[in-house]
Length: 338
Image (tube, rainbow, N blue to C red):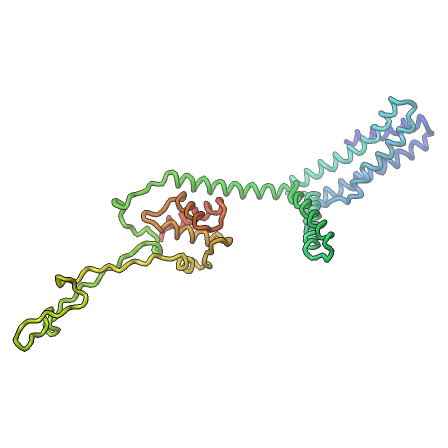
């Protein structure tokens, strides 16, 4: 790169010397290639220090050789050599840009950060914040409209050429794909046991397991209480009293109290989260509570596809990726030892 820059400077000197004297040619080379070399060293030093270069330095790397190109083109004796004379000074610009680009890539590889990209991203975010604030609070309607459009144009540039952001987004996407694949495979290879052969185990969640309490035995009536035979009338005739709770044959029917299912509000209270509401954005913990409630709303418990379909039919809000992640969390809670 240094050789290319030196060759460009010598070519400019010899081209201009043919039309003017050596002093004029030397001054043109100093003003063009010499100043470009100084700016190239400044750019290289700032890049090696991990700092962004000012815009005037980047502009000077091309403006000064462009002026030397125009001067050489004027000094050309004929048309074909005009093109050659004009291209010769640009070798210095290419050399300076190449050295700065290579140095920047070395710094990014060693330190893991790109100062130029960070400076551009900071400028875009700062301009976006300014235009969003002006679009929301400026008293002039036309200015608000212009700022609103400018903010949308700036939004397209957020994250451009940001390698760190790209790596983080790829990590997030890989995690989501892994979770989705785990849930899909678990749902595909799950074995559903029919209620007739499914034993009641202690693995069922204590909150969602249906429990029917045992009924106390019916006490036998004592003699002092008169048993089932009422008192006798004056003619010593036995009179059967109508007993409350007895059927026509005098036998108390077996009564099984209805088991009240665990409500969504109770599950939310146990989990320590606010009650999930239909149509409102839910947190990850609330989605887990809703999936648990829907899964154990039937016996046997619903599969992932059935639970996800019930989630959407109930009107709750949540994307497919968040539902899969919450389902994986629910499965992990069920499989964890209690």
